[in-house]
Length: 404
Image 1 (cartoon, rainbow, N blue to C red):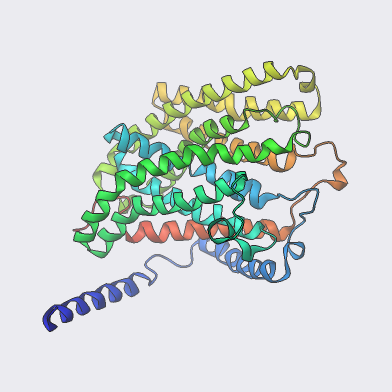
Image 2 (image 1 turned 90 degrees about the vertical axis):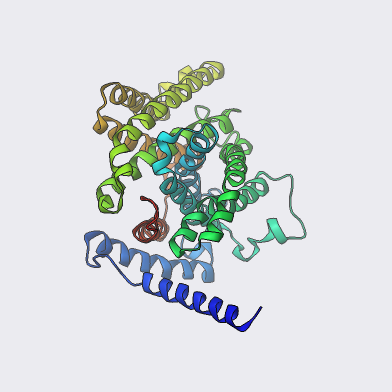
């Protein structure tokens, strides 16, 4: 390699570095209501995370031997991973079924899924008593290959890599690296197929974690089909999150969208609503079959039974009908309302398994209630993910075609 080529490569590297430094500078308004609310929470959450890592779980959480899993697992991991399900569903629709209708939102969906795994699945790190052993599933001497958690840990790691590869052409586009972009584009389809396979396994694998808690989970929720229910519910949870996030992005980032994104928004939301209605009907049908098979009718006439009916009727049946009605009439507002209700329903469902319906027989004084520090850390993780998502969308061609 001669001196001219070396000098040219050095100059290119300096240009890219200068470009990145310039992009790190704030380009949006700083004193916005969201920033004013979220920034102090993120800062406090970072301090509490350091306290938790130094002092241990007991210093920041109300976890115990009776309740080893709290909202960091029940919400951050179980709910966060379900909300990220839109990435594997839409990549299957776009790249495998070749449906170009949903192509305008595929980049934002992949980004949302990738960040959800990085931030929410990363919350497992906080929940580990000996957090320094987090590398054990990959580098440890005793891998524990018979453990469901071993399977889930590897799936999380591999899926994050796959999702990053799927999104990497956008980064190359942003940096103007056309040759590298072509190479990365050639890897996308393989990463998509690999990611879809991983997702179908670990979405159900999260449900399989609760199979070992028979007798501790209320009979109305415990079934041998928990993995199937987790997988099916992740489909409409992911699509509902795409509707929710897409509706907000359409308002907030409207000026950053090209004509294709703006003009196709209504049709895409209607199509996603139809998909949600279909999958929620399947989920509801499975729940009814499981209830009949389990013969737990008498348990419905109890406080926990009433709570179960609220989840099934209020958070599944009603939004299913709203999705169907909105899709038939072309009313986007009905689909958006249904998406919000279904997202709340997923939160309730996952917390039922990990907290609310877990050891329901204990008196209230002995039940797990998250500490304020657990809640603040959870909020800080959510807000930090939104900040990163906003930063990327504001700078990279996520909602529009390449500036080049």
